[in-house]
Image (cartoon, rainbow, N blue to C red; front, side, top):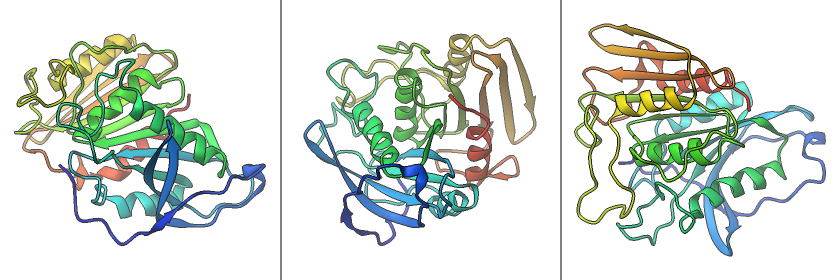
Length: 293
């Protein structure tokens, strides 16, 4: 699932490398379409960057859209962009390839050696922006919605040497991932509606109609959160619940990270405007910004 039709964006452009990005100020940029070459193929992403003085290190967030969302705004996109200007971070909105089959899927999941294109793409975005902006290499993050949420767990599992944390809504990951080794530390926050009729909350499930061939059974949300707590060797957990929200926090995890979950009792699959009284985009940034790699 996606969001609203994308706001008008600038023509496709290529970024110009800077000899010493941290010696240059940055100018505000909003929803510019950027082209990069990945494995000899052109890939696109949308870029929003803040004004900053020379020497200001900028955090970087990569956002991954839901199924069918490549031509649509990311959820709370304007709010993320405005917060980026305030907090001095860059938003890079990834765009899936448009010629993949249902068996392949818009974002490759349970990445094997033969399907690293999206991981290569994510790293290429980081590399490209690091050649242009004063990127803080310790504060690189990923967020996602629905299918894009599922892809953030590919980053959490396989690119944790570069990304410090992921936060997403309405996804899950395979019960038996091909690879999920913590080389670096990885903080995880997952938000999910317990009434989600598209991506089941309580039960494991399988893909249908030839979708995402070879990905395998997908985990229930509680099972996924528990698996991450074990993977990150967390030492303690705390659960707070009321009529609207169950909030689970696993702490004392590897690399001083947290595994955190908000289960929204009466919510379905649509991105929520707020969670437990806090705007969703702000909650996500507050979590991500706690962690470095």
